[in-house]
Image 1 (cartoon, rainbow, N blue to C red):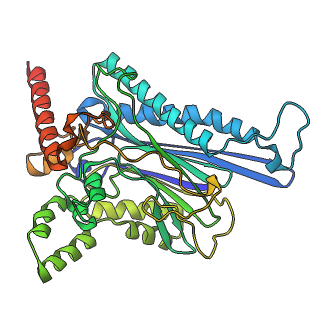
Image 2: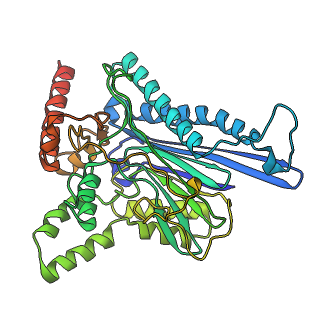
Length: 417
């Protein structure tokens, strides 16, 4: 199994002497017996939040905890499928390879463990470390994945020249898009595009039993030609001037509006551009470098971390690919393991404790605070239900922004004293 990883601080943070708060990890297990070779792997990316609040520590804890938890499990999972190596066991070891339910449960448990470890650190350090995370586990012809926040997982199929987004951002703008409040093109440049609704970690007062993290997960089959790509949002959100185009788009009409749309699509890092860049590269390494160069050429607003792998698993791609992307229409297939298995996505629209990227705030204020460019998050109350269900997203955003502003004004005041 081939894979390549890349980390880049991003053009804007490089110029402002910022820090890279992303973290990534990968581990592969290869076994062989007789004429059979088997490979499995774990890939994980975490996007730390708030440079002054130990976001880099949060991402570090997250990736290492998940790798530690899943590596032992994956080695055991390989041992539990002797039939795939042509072995007939007559003693204590039987073929009981974990199914999708068990694998997804292990992913979710590993992420929950990371969440708890980060909160333990927050309590000890009197800090507020937070991070997003996306994890992909390649095993027995499938990829099983889980995520919290706006880091993403994709499958790219060269035979059909198709890219499928497996994850759905836990963000304010994505919720608005799902509700039809913004179009796809408006979502690319919406001024609230830096606000997410879930993250691992929290502050020193958070109890993990009282404030659990909600994890979404899924499983899809792999084909031999498939490429797996996971990334932090720095790749997709590289365009620094994007919010300036939102009023231009919404206040224009006719030919002027079409011209603005064309300019937005030209400057945004779209899924199709990611697909074309990867497919046109001569290697996984050159694909990663090209993707980073593209994001930096648009402004390089945030840190970037990308893992591209070539699992070479499963059968040859069929003439018609099954639905694998989260927005693709699901086929009616009875076999549980051949369809997407997503966690319940009907999240509460109330009590959205959004998080804001001070990287975007720096664009409209000043750049003196050079280590506060990433997301200021308090995003784990995502699933609470209360009387604010009647509020619109815009009301929630305004209220949350005010709360965050008051909160951090108080924090800065405390620090100055």
